[in-house]
Amino acid sequence: MFLGKWTCFRVIIYRKLVFVFLIRPAVTYGCEAWTQTNREEQHLRIFERRILRKIFGPVQNEDGSWRIRMNYELNELIENAGRVRFIKRRRIAWLGHLMRMDDKRTLKRISQWKP
Image (cartoon, rainbow, N blue to C red):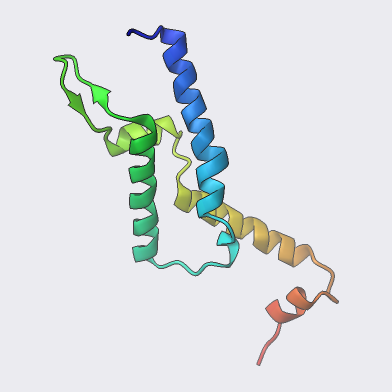
């Protein structure tokens, strides 16, 4: 069955929304407090690409054969809003929140503590 151009576009939008509003928050819950190494960032990128390939599925070539989506195609679909960038943005936002806290708050005192 052939889907129209607009129907296919809608399906891609819905799948992207599933990723952005369901999968990303579940995986990155509490990411502001994580310590990340380069190895962990790489594992997150691999996990993200694996999930995106399952959500968006394979691509049909002009000759009729099927192939998995390449990394640059996945980046285009999610508009380069990768998980590692998302986590770094959340950390910076948390730091800004922490810096604006009242000096009497426990978290603020802990962050400014010098042994």
